[in-house]
Length: 554
Ligand SMILES: CC(=O)SCCNC(=O)CCNC(=O)[C@H](O)C(C)(C)COP(=O)(O)OP(=O)(O)OC[C@H]1O[C@@H](n2cnc3c(N)ncnc32)[C@H](O)[C@@H]1OP(=O)(O)O
Image (cartoon, rainbow, N blue to C red; front, side):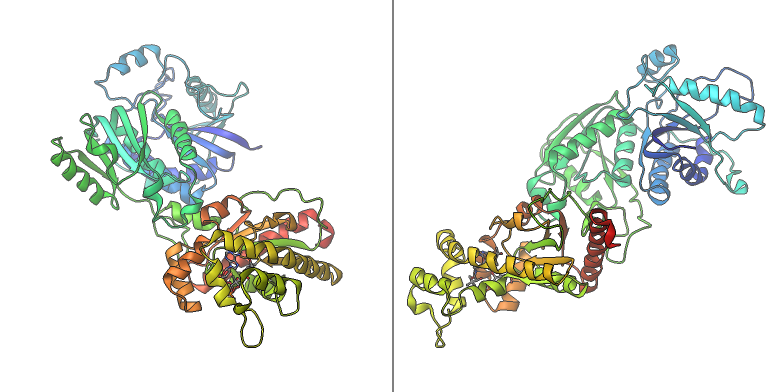
Protein backbone atom coordinates (compact mmCIF):
# COMPACT_ATOMS: atom_id res chain seq x y z
CA UNK A 1 0.00 0.00 0.00
CA UNK A 2 1.30 3.46 -0.85
CA UNK A 3 2.15 6.03 1.82
CA UNK A 4 -0.05 8.99 2.69
CA UNK A 5 1.32 12.32 3.88
CA UNK A 6 -1.51 12.92 6.37
CA UNK A 7 -4.02 10.56 7.94
CA UNK A 8 -6.71 10.44 10.61
CA UNK A 9 -6.66 7.53 13.01
CA UNK A 10 -10.13 6.84 14.43
CA UNK A 11 -9.76 5.01 17.72
CA UNK A 12 -12.87 2.97 18.40
CA UNK A 13 -11.87 0.96 21.46
CA UNK A 14 -13.29 2.00 24.82
CA UNK A 15 -10.98 4.49 26.56
CA UNK A 16 -10.06 2.04 29.35
CA UNK A 17 -8.66 -0.53 26.88
CA UNK A 18 -7.05 1.95 24.52
CA UNK A 19 -4.07 2.62 26.76
CA UNK A 20 -2.83 -0.92 26.14
CA UNK A 21 -3.70 -1.02 22.45
CA UNK A 22 -2.30 2.32 21.42
CA UNK A 23 1.38 1.44 20.78
CA UNK A 24 0.70 -1.35 18.24
CA UNK A 25 -2.08 0.71 16.64
CA UNK A 26 0.25 3.72 16.21
CA UNK A 27 2.98 1.49 14.88
CA UNK A 28 0.74 0.05 12.18
CA UNK A 29 -0.63 3.52 11.32
CA UNK A 30 2.97 4.70 10.91
CA UNK A 31 3.44 2.10 8.15
CA UNK A 32 0.96 4.09 6.05
CA UNK A 33 1.34 7.73 7.09
CA UNK A 34 4.51 9.74 6.56
CA UNK A 35 4.03 13.15 8.09
CA UNK A 36 0.98 14.09 10.17
CA UNK A 37 -1.26 11.67 12.01
CA UNK A 38 -4.41 13.11 13.56
CA UNK A 39 -6.01 11.00 16.27
CA UNK A 40 -9.80 11.14 16.59
CA UNK A 41 -11.37 9.41 19.58
CA UNK A 42 -14.56 7.57 18.73
CA UNK A 43 -15.07 4.88 21.35
CA UNK A 44 -17.57 2.27 20.10
CA UNK A 45 -19.19 2.16 16.67
CA UNK A 46 -22.55 0.64 17.61
CA UNK A 47 -22.12 -1.87 14.83
CA UNK A 48 -23.25 -4.83 16.86
CA UNK A 49 -26.69 -3.31 17.42
CA UNK A 50 -26.92 -2.53 13.72
CA UNK A 51 -27.59 1.13 14.48
CA UNK A 52 -26.40 3.80 12.07
CA UNK A 53 -22.89 4.89 12.97
CA UNK A 54 -22.80 8.46 14.27
CA UNK A 55 -20.22 10.69 15.87
CA UNK A 56 -19.92 10.39 19.61
CA UNK A 57 -19.15 13.00 22.23
CA UNK A 58 -16.75 12.23 25.05
CA UNK A 59 -16.93 13.98 28.40
CA UNK A 60 -13.62 15.24 29.83
CA UNK A 61 -12.61 12.46 32.21
CA UNK A 62 -9.40 11.64 34.04
CA UNK A 63 -8.88 8.55 31.84
CA UNK A 64 -8.82 10.80 28.81
CA UNK A 65 -5.96 12.93 30.09
CA UNK A 66 -4.03 9.72 30.91
CA UNK A 67 -4.73 8.44 27.41
CA UNK A 68 -3.43 11.67 25.84
CA UNK A 69 -0.10 11.28 27.70
CA UNK A 70 0.05 7.65 26.61
CA UNK A 71 -0.58 8.49 22.96
CA UNK A 72 2.26 11.02 22.82
CA UNK A 73 4.62 8.91 24.87
CA UNK A 74 4.01 5.82 22.70
CA UNK A 75 4.21 7.95 19.55
CA UNK A 76 7.69 9.15 20.62
CA UNK A 77 8.73 5.53 21.10
CA UNK A 78 7.24 3.84 18.04
CA UNK A 79 6.78 6.55 15.40
CA UNK A 80 9.02 9.48 16.34
CA UNK A 81 9.06 10.70 12.72
CA UNK A 82 5.31 11.41 12.76
CA UNK A 83 3.70 14.66 13.86
CA UNK A 84 0.90 13.19 15.99
CA UNK A 85 -1.99 15.45 17.09
CA UNK A 86 -4.84 14.28 19.31
CA UNK A 87 -8.03 16.09 18.26
CA UNK A 88 -10.39 17.17 21.02
CA UNK A 89 -13.17 18.36 18.74
CA UNK A 90 -15.70 15.86 20.08
CA UNK A 91 -14.72 16.22 23.71
CA UNK A 92 -17.54 18.10 25.35
CA UNK A 93 -18.79 18.26 28.90
CA UNK A 94 -22.47 17.17 29.10
CA UNK A 95 -23.47 20.50 30.65
CA UNK A 96 -21.87 22.68 27.99
CA UNK A 97 -24.14 24.64 25.71
CA UNK A 98 -22.07 23.81 22.64
CA UNK A 99 -23.03 20.19 23.07
CA UNK A 100 -26.66 20.78 22.17
CA UNK A 101 -25.76 22.66 19.00
CA UNK A 102 -23.27 19.99 18.04
CA UNK A 103 -25.55 17.04 18.79
CA UNK A 104 -28.28 18.65 16.78
CA UNK A 105 -25.90 18.90 13.86
CA UNK A 106 -24.93 15.25 14.45
CA UNK A 107 -21.30 16.25 14.02
CA UNK A 108 -18.69 17.88 16.27
CA UNK A 109 -19.01 20.96 14.07
CA UNK A 110 -21.89 22.44 12.16
CA UNK A 111 -19.44 22.56 9.23
CA UNK A 112 -16.49 20.21 8.78
CA UNK A 113 -13.31 21.31 10.55
CA UNK A 114 -10.47 22.41 8.30
CA UNK A 115 -7.27 20.85 9.62
CA UNK A 116 -3.84 22.35 8.88
CA UNK A 117 -3.00 19.30 6.75
CA UNK A 118 -5.75 17.70 4.78
CA UNK A 119 -6.05 13.93 5.55
CA UNK A 120 -5.83 11.58 2.59
CA UNK A 121 -6.53 8.40 4.55
CA UNK A 122 -8.75 7.47 7.47
CA UNK A 123 -7.58 4.53 9.52
CA UNK A 124 -9.15 2.61 12.37
CA UNK A 125 -8.24 0.09 15.01
CA UNK A 126 -11.77 -1.39 15.05
CA UNK A 127 -11.47 -5.16 15.69
CA UNK A 128 -13.75 -6.85 13.13
CA UNK A 129 -15.93 -9.66 14.48
CA UNK A 130 -16.39 -11.09 10.98
CA UNK A 131 -15.16 -10.00 7.51
CA UNK A 132 -18.70 -8.92 6.56
CA UNK A 133 -18.40 -6.00 8.97
CA UNK A 134 -15.65 -4.32 7.00
CA UNK A 135 -18.07 -2.47 4.71
CA UNK A 136 -20.01 -1.15 7.65
CA UNK A 137 -16.81 0.02 9.35
CA UNK A 138 -15.61 1.72 6.19
CA UNK A 139 -18.98 3.51 6.00
CA UNK A 140 -18.57 4.63 9.56
CA UNK A 141 -15.08 5.94 8.83
CA UNK A 142 -16.54 8.02 6.01
CA UNK A 143 -18.96 9.59 8.51
CA UNK A 144 -16.03 10.53 10.71
CA UNK A 145 -14.32 11.83 7.61
CA UNK A 146 -17.26 14.23 7.16
CA UNK A 147 -16.35 15.98 10.43
CA UNK A 148 -13.13 17.19 8.81
CA UNK A 149 -12.25 18.60 5.41
CA UNK A 150 -10.43 15.66 3.85
CA UNK A 151 -8.85 15.01 0.48
CA UNK A 152 -11.57 14.29 -2.13
CA UNK A 153 -9.97 10.90 -2.76
CA UNK A 154 -10.12 9.79 0.87
CA UNK A 155 -9.02 6.18 1.36
CA UNK A 156 -10.07 4.11 4.36
CA UNK A 157 -7.98 1.38 5.89
CA UNK A 158 -8.70 -1.12 8.65
CA UNK A 159 -5.56 -1.68 10.68
CA UNK A 160 -4.65 -5.09 12.05
CA UNK A 161 -2.32 -4.29 14.93
CA UNK A 162 -0.58 -7.15 16.69
CA UNK A 163 -1.99 -6.88 20.20
CA UNK A 164 -1.67 -9.20 23.12
CA UNK A 165 -5.33 -10.13 23.66
CA UNK A 166 -5.12 -11.22 27.26
CA UNK A 167 -3.79 -7.91 28.47
CA UNK A 168 -6.66 -6.09 26.76
CA UNK A 169 -9.38 -7.84 28.67
CA UNK A 170 -9.59 -5.19 31.30
CA UNK A 171 -12.62 -4.47 33.40
CA UNK A 172 -14.14 -1.07 32.85
CA UNK A 173 -13.47 1.17 35.84
CA UNK A 174 -15.89 3.84 36.90
CA UNK A 175 -14.85 6.96 35.00
CA UNK A 176 -13.82 9.89 37.10
CA UNK A 177 -14.85 13.29 35.71
CA UNK A 178 -12.05 15.78 35.14
CA UNK A 179 -12.46 19.15 36.80
CA UNK A 180 -12.39 21.82 34.10
CA UNK A 181 -11.95 25.60 34.31
CA UNK A 182 -12.95 28.67 32.42
CA UNK A 183 -9.46 30.17 31.97
CA UNK A 184 -6.25 28.15 32.10
CA UNK A 185 -2.61 29.27 31.81
CA UNK A 186 0.51 27.37 30.78
CA UNK A 187 4.06 28.49 30.02
CA UNK A 188 7.19 27.20 28.31
CA UNK A 189 9.75 27.67 25.56
CA UNK A 190 7.94 25.36 23.12
CA UNK A 191 11.04 24.93 20.98
CA UNK A 192 10.57 22.22 18.30
CA UNK A 193 7.14 21.13 19.49
CA UNK A 194 7.52 17.55 20.77
CA UNK A 195 5.37 14.92 22.48
CA UNK A 196 5.80 16.39 25.96
CA UNK A 197 4.74 19.86 24.74
CA UNK A 198 1.77 18.37 22.92
CA UNK A 199 0.70 16.47 26.06
CA UNK A 200 0.90 19.69 28.06
CA UNK A 201 -1.07 21.61 25.44
CA UNK A 202 -3.68 18.89 24.83
CA UNK A 203 -4.35 18.52 28.56
CA UNK A 204 -4.47 22.30 28.96
CA UNK A 205 -7.09 22.39 26.18
CA UNK A 206 -9.00 19.64 27.94
CA UNK A 207 -9.01 21.64 31.18
CA UNK A 208 -9.93 24.98 29.63
CA UNK A 209 -13.54 25.65 28.71
CA UNK A 210 -13.16 29.22 27.50
CA UNK A 211 -9.60 30.53 27.21
CA UNK A 212 -6.07 29.14 27.16
CA UNK A 213 -3.33 31.67 27.94
CA UNK A 214 0.19 30.60 26.91
CA UNK A 215 3.37 32.38 28.00
CA UNK A 216 6.19 31.67 25.54
CA UNK A 217 9.76 32.27 26.78
CA UNK A 218 11.55 35.04 24.95
CA UNK A 219 14.92 36.87 25.16
CA UNK A 220 15.92 37.03 28.87
CA UNK A 221 14.23 33.69 29.62
CA UNK A 222 16.39 31.91 27.01
CA UNK A 223 19.78 33.12 28.26
CA UNK A 224 20.57 30.06 30.36
CA UNK A 225 19.22 27.43 27.96
CA UNK A 226 21.55 24.78 26.54
CA UNK A 227 22.40 25.51 22.87
CA UNK A 228 20.19 28.60 23.01
CA UNK A 229 21.49 29.67 19.60
CA UNK A 230 19.58 26.76 18.05
CA UNK A 231 16.23 27.67 19.63
CA UNK A 232 13.67 28.49 16.95
CA UNK A 233 12.75 32.18 16.65
CA UNK A 234 9.85 33.33 18.86
CA UNK A 235 7.60 34.01 15.86
CA UNK A 236 8.07 30.48 14.49
CA UNK A 237 7.39 28.87 17.89
CA UNK A 238 4.19 30.90 18.20
CA UNK A 239 3.14 29.97 14.66
CA UNK A 240 3.62 26.25 15.40
CA UNK A 241 1.64 26.55 18.64
CA UNK A 242 -1.22 28.33 16.91
CA UNK A 243 -1.40 25.74 14.18
CA UNK A 244 -1.40 22.85 16.66
CA UNK A 245 -4.08 24.37 18.89
CA UNK A 246 -6.25 25.34 15.94
CA UNK A 247 -6.28 21.67 14.93
CA UNK A 248 -6.75 20.26 18.40
CA UNK A 249 -9.47 22.54 19.77
CA UNK A 250 -10.50 25.29 17.35
CA UNK A 251 -13.32 26.56 19.54
CA UNK A 252 -11.10 27.59 22.42
CA UNK A 253 -9.83 31.16 22.72
CA UNK A 254 -6.03 30.98 22.57
CA UNK A 255 -3.93 33.91 23.74
CA UNK A 256 -0.15 33.72 23.33
CA UNK A 257 2.10 36.25 25.06
CA UNK A 258 5.90 36.56 25.38
CA UNK A 259 7.33 35.50 28.73
CA UNK A 260 10.17 37.80 29.79
CA UNK A 261 10.33 36.63 33.42
CA UNK A 262 9.20 33.46 35.23
CA UNK A 263 5.82 34.96 36.17
CA UNK A 264 4.57 36.90 33.18
CA UNK A 265 0.88 37.68 32.96
CA UNK A 266 -0.08 34.71 35.19
CA UNK A 267 0.41 36.90 38.28
CA UNK A 268 -1.77 39.74 36.95
CA UNK A 269 -4.74 38.15 35.17
CA UNK A 270 -7.77 38.00 37.50
CA UNK A 271 -9.75 35.60 35.25
CA UNK A 272 -7.29 32.73 35.46
CA UNK A 273 -8.35 29.70 37.50
CA UNK A 274 -5.81 26.98 36.79
CA UNK A 275 -2.13 26.67 35.84
CA UNK A 276 -0.80 23.52 34.18
CA UNK A 277 2.65 22.46 35.40
CA UNK A 278 5.00 19.50 35.14
CA UNK A 279 6.97 17.92 38.01
CA UNK A 280 9.80 20.30 37.04
CA UNK A 281 7.78 23.50 36.93
CA UNK A 282 5.58 22.81 39.97
CA UNK A 283 7.77 25.07 42.13
CA UNK A 284 7.31 27.83 39.54
CA UNK A 285 3.53 27.36 39.82
CA UNK A 286 3.74 27.73 43.60
CA UNK A 287 5.82 30.89 43.17
CA UNK A 288 3.13 32.25 40.81
CA UNK A 289 0.50 31.70 43.49
CA UNK A 290 2.65 33.49 46.09
CA UNK A 291 2.93 36.51 43.79
CA UNK A 292 -0.80 36.40 42.97
CA UNK A 293 -1.55 36.50 46.67
CA UNK A 294 0.73 39.57 47.04
CA UNK A 295 -1.16 41.12 44.11
CA UNK A 296 -4.51 40.47 45.83
CA UNK A 297 -5.55 37.75 43.36
CA UNK A 298 -6.92 34.27 44.05
CA UNK A 299 -4.56 31.29 43.92
CA UNK A 300 -4.61 29.11 40.82
CA UNK A 301 -5.31 25.39 40.90
CA UNK A 302 -2.03 23.62 40.10
CA UNK A 303 -2.73 20.82 37.64
CA UNK A 304 0.39 18.66 37.43
CA UNK A 305 1.19 16.39 34.52
CA UNK A 306 3.85 13.68 34.39
CA UNK A 307 7.01 14.25 32.34
CA UNK A 308 7.27 11.92 29.35
CA UNK A 309 10.32 9.65 29.30
CA UNK A 310 12.55 9.65 26.22
CA UNK A 311 13.39 6.03 25.52
CA UNK A 312 15.90 7.07 22.85
CA UNK A 313 17.93 9.42 25.05
CA UNK A 314 21.73 9.03 25.01
CA UNK A 315 24.00 8.93 28.06
CA UNK A 316 24.58 12.67 27.95
CA UNK A 317 20.92 13.59 27.35
CA UNK A 318 18.11 14.07 29.83
CA UNK A 319 15.80 11.14 30.60
CA UNK A 320 12.70 13.17 29.81
CA UNK A 321 11.69 14.20 26.32
CA UNK A 322 13.32 17.60 26.07
CA UNK A 323 13.97 20.31 23.51
CA UNK A 324 17.61 20.56 24.58
CA UNK A 325 18.12 16.88 23.66
CA UNK A 326 16.48 17.56 20.31
CA UNK A 327 18.78 20.56 19.82
CA UNK A 328 21.87 18.55 20.73
CA UNK A 329 20.85 15.94 18.12
CA UNK A 330 21.03 18.70 15.49
CA UNK A 331 24.74 19.18 16.15
CA UNK A 332 26.78 17.87 13.23
CA UNK A 333 23.77 17.69 10.88
CA UNK A 334 23.17 19.94 7.89
CA UNK A 335 21.00 22.78 9.24
CA UNK A 336 20.87 24.78 6.02
CA UNK A 337 21.86 23.66 2.54
CA UNK A 338 25.14 25.00 1.14
CA UNK A 339 24.81 27.78 -1.40
CA UNK A 340 25.96 27.22 -4.97
CA UNK A 341 29.68 27.82 -5.46
CA UNK A 342 30.25 27.46 -9.22
CA UNK A 343 33.37 29.67 -8.93
CA UNK A 344 35.11 27.03 -6.77
CA UNK A 345 36.60 23.79 -8.10
CA UNK A 346 34.31 20.93 -7.06
CA UNK A 347 37.21 19.25 -5.27
CA UNK A 348 38.71 19.53 -2.80
CA UNK A 349 35.46 20.21 -0.94
CA UNK A 350 36.31 23.09 1.39
CA UNK A 351 34.82 23.43 4.87
CA UNK A 352 35.24 26.82 6.54
CA UNK A 353 35.47 25.99 10.25
CA UNK A 354 34.98 28.97 12.52
CA UNK A 355 33.81 29.83 16.02
CA UNK A 356 34.48 32.09 18.96
CA UNK A 357 37.80 32.08 20.77
CA UNK A 358 37.99 29.14 23.19
CA UNK A 359 35.09 27.31 21.51
CA UNK A 360 37.23 24.24 20.81
CA UNK A 361 37.45 24.87 17.09
CA UNK A 362 41.02 23.58 16.94
CA UNK A 363 40.16 20.28 18.63
CA UNK A 364 37.37 19.78 16.09
CA UNK A 365 39.79 20.62 13.28
CA UNK A 366 42.21 17.99 14.63
CA UNK A 367 39.41 15.36 14.69
CA UNK A 368 38.60 16.21 11.08
CA UNK A 369 42.28 15.96 10.19
CA UNK A 370 42.39 12.49 11.78
CA UNK A 371 39.42 11.52 9.61
CA UNK A 372 41.30 12.49 6.46
CA UNK A 373 40.76 16.22 5.92
CA UNK A 374 43.61 18.60 5.12
CA UNK A 375 43.63 21.19 7.91
CA UNK A 376 44.60 24.75 7.08
CA UNK A 377 45.30 26.56 10.36
CA UNK A 378 44.76 30.28 9.71
CA UNK A 379 45.99 31.44 13.14
CA UNK A 380 49.31 29.86 12.23
CA UNK A 381 49.24 31.28 8.70
CA UNK A 382 48.48 34.65 10.30
CA UNK A 383 51.65 34.40 12.32
CA UNK A 384 53.62 33.38 9.22
CA UNK A 385 52.17 36.30 7.29
CA UNK A 386 54.19 38.83 9.33
CA UNK A 387 57.48 37.03 9.77
CA UNK A 388 60.46 39.41 9.61
CA UNK A 389 61.17 40.46 6.06
CA UNK A 390 57.62 40.11 4.75
CA UNK A 391 55.61 43.07 3.41
CA UNK A 392 53.08 42.63 6.22
CA UNK A 393 55.87 42.72 8.84
CA UNK A 394 56.92 46.21 7.81
CA UNK A 395 53.38 47.48 7.47
CA UNK A 396 52.46 46.17 10.96
CA UNK A 397 55.46 47.90 12.53
CA UNK A 398 54.67 51.11 10.63
CA UNK A 399 51.11 51.01 11.87
CA UNK A 400 51.67 49.88 15.49
CA UNK A 401 55.20 51.15 16.29
CA UNK A 402 58.62 49.59 15.88
CA UNK A 403 58.87 48.97 19.65
CA UNK A 404 56.47 46.03 19.16
CA UNK A 405 59.25 43.55 18.39
CA UNK A 406 60.84 40.82 20.51
CA UNK A 407 64.60 40.56 20.91
CA UNK A 408 64.83 38.34 17.82
CA UNK A 409 63.04 41.06 15.78
CA UNK A 410 59.82 39.02 15.46
CA UNK A 411 56.58 40.82 16.28
CA UNK A 412 55.47 40.50 19.92
CA UNK A 413 52.03 39.05 19.28
CA UNK A 414 50.87 39.16 22.88
CA UNK A 415 51.59 42.93 22.98
CA UNK A 416 49.95 43.39 19.57
CA UNK A 417 46.91 41.46 20.82
CA UNK A 418 46.57 43.81 23.78
CA UNK A 419 46.54 46.79 21.40
CA UNK A 420 43.92 45.41 19.05
CA UNK A 421 41.48 43.22 21.01
CA UNK A 422 38.69 45.42 22.34
CA UNK A 423 39.59 48.26 19.95
CA UNK A 424 37.60 47.95 16.75
CA UNK A 425 39.59 50.50 14.75
CA UNK A 426 43.01 49.16 15.70
CA UNK A 427 41.89 45.59 15.01
CA UNK A 428 40.63 46.65 11.59
CA UNK A 429 43.97 48.36 10.88
CA UNK A 430 45.73 45.05 11.63
CA UNK A 431 43.34 42.79 9.73
CA UNK A 432 43.37 45.11 6.69
CA UNK A 433 47.10 44.37 6.52
CA UNK A 434 47.11 40.65 7.29
CA UNK A 435 43.86 39.16 5.97
CA UNK A 436 44.74 39.57 2.27
CA UNK A 437 48.14 37.95 2.95
CA UNK A 438 46.56 35.06 4.89
CA UNK A 439 43.91 34.59 2.17
CA UNK A 440 46.70 34.13 -0.42
CA UNK A 441 48.40 31.53 1.77
CA UNK A 442 45.06 29.69 2.25
CA UNK A 443 44.38 29.59 -1.48
CA UNK A 444 47.90 28.23 -2.02
CA UNK A 445 47.26 25.42 0.45
CA UNK A 446 43.94 24.53 -1.21
CA UNK A 447 45.64 24.50 -4.60
CA UNK A 448 48.30 22.19 -3.20
CA UNK A 449 45.61 19.88 -1.75
CA UNK A 450 43.95 19.75 -5.18
CA UNK A 451 47.24 18.79 -6.82
CA UNK A 452 47.68 16.05 -4.21
CA UNK A 453 44.20 14.72 -5.06
CA UNK A 454 42.77 15.45 -1.61
CA UNK A 455 38.98 15.46 -1.21
CA UNK A 456 38.33 17.64 1.83
CA UNK A 457 40.09 20.74 3.20
CA UNK A 458 39.20 22.40 6.48
CA UNK A 459 39.99 26.10 6.64
CA UNK A 460 40.27 26.61 10.40
CA UNK A 461 39.74 30.40 10.67
CA UNK A 462 38.65 32.18 13.85
CA UNK A 463 37.03 35.08 12.06
CA UNK A 464 36.14 33.56 8.71
CA UNK A 465 32.67 35.16 8.66
CA UNK A 466 33.89 38.58 9.82
CA UNK A 467 36.54 38.47 7.05
CA UNK A 468 33.88 37.65 4.44
CA UNK A 469 35.73 34.50 3.39
CA UNK A 470 32.54 32.49 2.76
CA UNK A 471 33.19 32.66 -0.99
CA UNK A 472 36.39 30.64 -0.44
CA UNK A 473 34.52 27.64 1.01
CA UNK A 474 31.71 25.25 0.08
CA UNK A 475 30.22 25.06 3.59
CA UNK A 476 30.53 26.97 6.86
CA UNK A 477 30.78 24.96 10.09
CA UNK A 478 30.51 26.89 13.37
CA UNK A 479 31.57 25.73 16.84
CA UNK A 480 29.76 27.23 19.83
CA UNK A 481 30.03 27.18 23.61
CA UNK A 482 28.51 29.61 26.14
CA UNK A 483 30.58 32.79 26.63
CA UNK A 484 31.19 32.08 30.36
CA UNK A 485 32.70 28.71 29.48
CA UNK A 486 34.81 30.32 26.73
CA UNK A 487 36.20 32.91 29.18
CA UNK A 488 37.16 30.14 31.64
CA UNK A 489 38.88 28.16 28.91
CA UNK A 490 40.78 31.17 27.50
CA UNK A 491 42.03 32.31 30.91
CA UNK A 492 43.19 28.78 31.79
CA UNK A 493 44.75 28.06 28.40
CA UNK A 494 46.39 31.40 27.56
CA UNK A 495 47.04 32.77 31.07
CA UNK A 496 45.22 36.03 30.27
CA UNK A 497 42.83 37.87 32.59
CA UNK A 498 39.06 37.32 32.27
CA UNK A 499 38.75 40.96 31.10
CA UNK A 500 41.23 40.27 28.26
CA UNK A 501 39.43 37.03 27.41
CA UNK A 502 36.10 38.85 27.28
CA UNK A 503 37.62 41.62 25.14
CA UNK A 504 38.83 38.98 22.71
CA UNK A 505 35.37 37.42 22.53
CA UNK A 506 33.79 40.80 21.99
CA UNK A 507 36.08 41.37 19.02
CA UNK A 508 34.28 38.49 17.28
CA UNK A 509 30.72 37.92 16.14
CA UNK A 510 28.36 36.50 18.76
CA UNK A 511 27.53 32.78 18.64
CA UNK A 512 23.97 33.59 17.55
CA UNK A 513 25.17 35.70 14.61
CA UNK A 514 27.63 33.01 13.51
CA UNK A 515 24.95 30.29 13.74
CA UNK A 516 22.77 32.35 11.38
CA UNK A 517 25.44 31.80 8.70
CA UNK A 518 26.23 28.17 9.55
CA UNK A 519 25.47 25.12 7.46
CA UNK A 520 26.58 22.86 10.32
CA UNK A 521 26.89 23.66 14.04
CA UNK A 522 29.10 21.78 16.51
CA UNK A 523 29.75 22.16 20.21
CA UNK A 524 32.56 21.02 22.49
CA UNK A 525 30.50 21.65 25.63
CA UNK A 526 30.54 18.01 26.76
CA UNK A 527 33.15 15.28 27.25
CA UNK A 528 35.84 14.86 24.52
CA UNK A 529 34.24 11.54 23.51
CA UNK A 530 30.94 13.34 22.80
CA UNK A 531 32.81 15.83 20.59
CA UNK A 532 34.55 12.99 18.77
CA UNK A 533 31.22 11.26 18.04
CA UNK A 534 29.66 14.55 16.95
CA UNK A 535 32.50 15.20 14.49
CA UNK A 536 32.30 11.64 13.19
CA UNK A 537 28.57 12.11 12.58
CA UNK A 538 29.22 15.41 10.77
CA UNK A 539 32.00 13.80 8.73
CA UNK A 540 29.88 10.78 7.70
CA UNK A 541 27.01 13.04 6.65
CA UNK A 542 29.49 15.21 4.73
CA UNK A 543 30.80 12.15 2.87
CA UNK A 544 27.23 11.36 1.76
CA UNK A 545 26.77 14.93 0.49
CA UNK A 546 30.04 14.82 -1.40
CA UNK A 547 29.08 11.50 -2.95
CA UNK A 548 25.78 12.95 -4.10
CA UNK A 549 27.70 15.67 -5.94
CA UNK A 550 30.41 13.31 -7.14
CA UNK A 551 28.83 9.86 -7.47
CA UNK A 552 32.01 8.58 -9.13
CA UNK A 553 33.91 8.93 -5.87
CA UNK A 554 31.99 6.11 -4.18
C1 LIG B 1 39.98 35.28 8.68
C2 LIG B 1 40.70 34.56 9.83
O1 LIG B 1 40.07 33.97 10.67
S1 LIG B 1 42.40 34.53 9.87
C3 LIG B 1 42.86 33.87 11.42
C4 LIG B 1 42.78 34.89 12.50
N1 LIG B 1 43.88 35.83 12.40
C5 LIG B 1 43.69 37.15 12.19
O2 LIG B 1 42.59 37.65 12.07
C6 LIG B 1 44.95 37.98 12.11
C7 LIG B 1 44.98 39.00 13.20
N2 LIG B 1 45.33 38.38 14.45
C8 LIG B 1 46.61 38.20 14.84
O3 LIG B 1 47.52 38.52 14.13
C9 LIG B 1 46.89 37.56 16.18
O4 LIG B 1 45.75 36.82 16.59
C10 LIG B 1 47.22 38.60 17.29
C11 LIG B 1 48.51 39.26 16.96
C12 LIG B 1 46.16 39.65 17.42
C13 LIG B 1 47.35 37.85 18.62
O5 LIG B 1 48.28 36.83 18.46
P1 LIG B 1 48.46 35.67 19.57
O6 LIG B 1 48.55 36.31 20.90
O7 LIG B 1 49.54 34.77 19.15
O8 LIG B 1 47.08 34.92 19.56
P2 LIG B 1 46.49 33.94 18.45
O9 LIG B 1 46.85 34.33 17.07
O10 LIG B 1 46.77 32.55 18.85
O11 LIG B 1 44.97 34.31 18.62
C14 LIG B 1 44.39 34.30 19.94
C15 LIG B 1 42.92 34.20 19.83
O12 LIG B 1 42.39 35.39 19.23
C16 LIG B 1 41.57 35.07 18.17
N3 LIG B 1 41.77 35.99 17.05
C17 LIG B 1 42.78 36.00 16.16
N4 LIG B 1 42.59 36.98 15.29
C18 LIG B 1 41.46 37.62 15.62
C19 LIG B 1 40.75 38.70 15.08
N5 LIG B 1 41.16 39.31 13.97
N6 LIG B 1 39.59 39.08 15.68
C20 LIG B 1 39.15 38.45 16.78
N7 LIG B 1 39.78 37.39 17.33
C21 LIG B 1 40.92 36.99 16.75
C22 LIG B 1 41.99 33.67 17.75
O13 LIG B 1 40.87 32.96 17.32
C23 LIG B 1 42.53 33.02 18.99
O14 LIG B 1 41.56 32.35 19.73
P3 LIG B 1 41.34 30.76 19.62
O15 LIG B 1 42.68 30.14 19.42
O16 LIG B 1 40.68 30.39 20.86
O17 LIG B 1 40.47 30.58 18.43
